[in-house]
Length: 318
Ligand code: A3P
Image 1 (tube, rainbow, N blue to C red):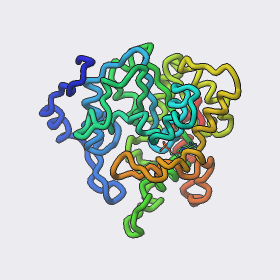
Image 2: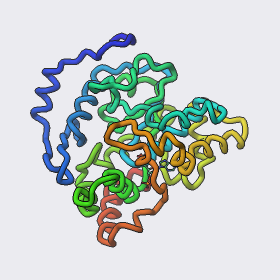
Image 3: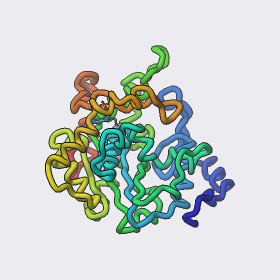
Image 4: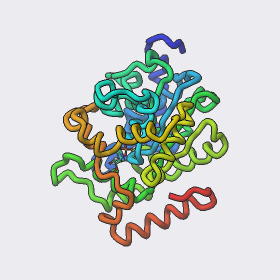
């Protein structure tokens, strides 16, 4: 495929034929239709976009792909990477003041290029291109996986806090009668049936790859960023080849990307990138251990058990 602005060449009939045969759930959380492709669950639109992305995307040497399952700190990571790559700018030039981090770092399977109404053109984005995906490692295009120069930064989070964040996010601005129950969200999460699920397989694939190729994949945890943000931001900057000369520059990035600041920026208080999600929905509490305020001891036990089982022998703790 050429690097010019043009539609990806894909065989739509072939895609439709594959989709017809995919496992499907009509009433996920009682409302949403999910399809399972290559072992992961998502909406039909996302699955189609992922198929086109996998079949057609050509990476460039200095591309940076941010990756995450849902509600694990993607917005924060996007903001940090935008700030690091933009360098120190005055308030009026700061990209984060102009638009939500999800605008500056588009999520590939939600991009116009792979959907009917794109907002960005991936092929005219200036290099180094910074973009994001929620897709699991296994369906990434070969040109990303096989390129030594295209880097990936993955962020994950404690599964119980991820679930609580997910539950709040999907209930945001819903009428009382439409709210999803936490019991239902936990139940489906444990079965691996949720957007971009199963969660543990998603995390473990990136984890294993990051161990094999630490120069290519940086693996981060939301909790580490909360505990020692300077250390983690320095690590990200170094990985991106933009290491900071002094602590003050690190602090500037952290302050620019703090939850309080981003939440209170006009663009995040009033705007909306996707018609169905208000920008404010991306910024909630950002508290480690918030699950304690919502989960029953039974839910805690169920999730601790599955986490232990899934992560056993991996060397990863969440
Ligand atoms: P909570 O719902 O626990 O508050 P994602 O960006 O992947 O959708 O993840 C959303 C979670 O990250 C939310 O967690 C949100 O509040 C938190 N978050 C968003 N921006 C943040 C920031 N700048 N600093 C810390 N946490 C942030």
